Image 1 (cartoon, rainbow, N blue to C red):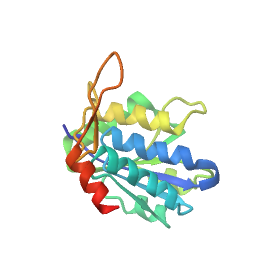
Image 2 (cartoon, rainbow, N blue to C red):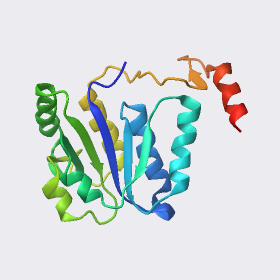
Image 3 (cartoon, rainbow, N blue to C red):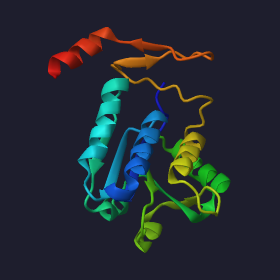
Amino acid sequence: MKSQFDITVLRLNHRPSRDKRVSTHIALTTRAIGGKKVYYSGHYDTSLEQSVERVKGTWGGSFEIEFLEKPLKLIKNWKGVSIHLTMYGSKLSEGVQETKQRLLDDPTLPVLIIVGGAKVPPEIFEYSTINLSVGNQPHSEIAALAVVLDRLIDSENWEFDFPEPRLTIIPDSRGKNVLENTEKSEKSKESE
């Protein structure tokens, strides 16, 4: 199954010393719940990109990560729906319904979900299609992203296909059951 919408996430103002795990988890959450790409701005971070590439190499898929020097340009020129996650935004239920209806009316519209960082410029609020809040209290950016992705995708479960995995988890209520794709493992050994 693929996500019914073309979803990309932009992580603003990444700081390697403070945000390494948060930005990595934003990328992993985006990937796991049907997104195709994550952009990040702030400080360029090879270790962030390598972490995402390692996950992709192990668990499959074609997910991308890319650094942007000028994220405002991306938001300003976005040819779809841009959702800025902020605790100052519209109520979740109303904002998601409005956004979802717009996407159902035109499923070709790409979605950009903007996840803030330190010092979000006021222009982000201005250029975003919608400023959306998952509650009007301080909270985790990762949790907000997961909630919004779940509501947008409206899936009973998040079972997406990730082509060419080296490892695949077989759901098991009693323990860990992991299948190793030996063909993929041999290819990765040859490339080392």
